[in-house]
Picture 1 (cartoon, rainbow, N blue to C red):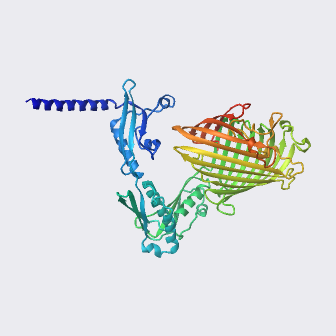
Picture 2 (picture 1 turned 90 degrees about the vertical axis):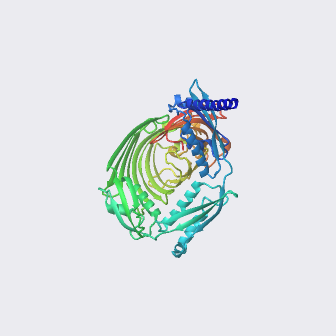
Picture 3 (picture 1 turned 90 degrees about the horizontal axis):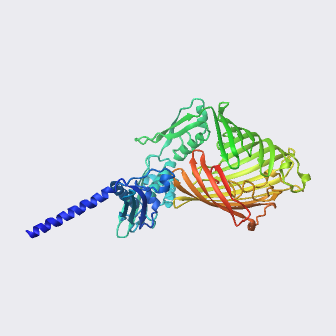
Length: 613
């Protein structure tokens, strides 16, 4: 009897204790998650792990200042999150990873919880043997196509010895499929066979290529055009009926048509059927933009102050792809700027654009004030999506307010009214993305200007400017770097260079510890510019919450009077912090910067739209 009672007592005790623990865990449901931490993870970052979870933490700043809604703790949701973390690790090659709740710190008074998750990553598995099985039918179609597949196979991400990742296998499947698509095989199947060798912690990958029929483009149908002629649209296609099928040609055609700026939507789609016909019809579907559009905007910046502009377009002038753009702007720096631009796509070649652009403007810079009118003619050629070139001829007449200039050089050589006739050559490589606020990629641009080419041009000089930018993701942030270097050389005996062509430094898009044009040679408290420029910037951009992000930066640079002289000992430096608010037109930017190693200079606050670079 006594033994029976002891058994009942122990059973009851365990039942009550289990109930209490369950009630305690349940009572924490609907508490605010104040922090979410990880321990034990080495390869996968905390930020990547948080992205796999529905549960998130909200600190006091995010809740009260940014208005972010708190997440209420749920035991069931957290259990699903732990499973999601394990699945993510398995995709990253850690087949034996574990994730458990290590600590749940509860504050009953504030009704908050702090979560700590312990991760045991375990050993990763690596890629073992990689082989490619090509059917005889593929090799029989020609050595060129077979060699193309071989080339892609040499560039596979999932290579022997590398950590196995599902994402690498998916990327390799797409790369092989794209190579076959571009070679005329839109129905190809790329099948990976994975064989895990647990003792060796490896995965052998065998790729099987099933090419399907060799296909060609068939009938081309154009849909949605009302004012733009079908012949014009067909002119910009990179292929014709009967050509070998290529997805690259489809994408290039879509890009060309959309870049005409005549359409809101332009898609070029192959109608692939389940019957895998060797003749593939194509549908071109467009939605035309309004023939006349006007945008009116305004803004504010510390340099331009109030800025008001109007931007109007007339599309399809004379029934073709030509368009006319009328732009008018007012700000403190440009009290008036009016530009009329005629744009002719497909000038001489499909990828060349001609622009004719008369203009009139007034500039009131810290170092000079002038009125200018004239025009330029530009030919812009696009070699690829990343590589572009331009040649621009400009003639302008300049009326200079000499009272706005510092007393520098031989005053007898300064005319208040002069002509300039010049040609500028430009070359740009830009694969940075996205456009408004790049997070990765490279930008390289060079421009060379020759001034003094007849038509009564008063000054003869050459001007070159080179700029390099690099954007690199780093631990969930973006590291952005920039270098600019330029020089001017006059071929006149007096060596005078017009003030508007000289280099100036300082400002919101330059060395931010100084105001616009404030850094460099100064006479009588007026910036005079120089003939040599060297600038560099390093900026770490990091997300804060939603559309809000921050930045830490260091800028350096200077301007020198001498031509192509860059004494690095004279470089001036500034450092600062910034906030960015993402908008559809670019980031609204606030930067606070102060010169370093410079006791005399004061700090600056810059407010503008768009990244500094």
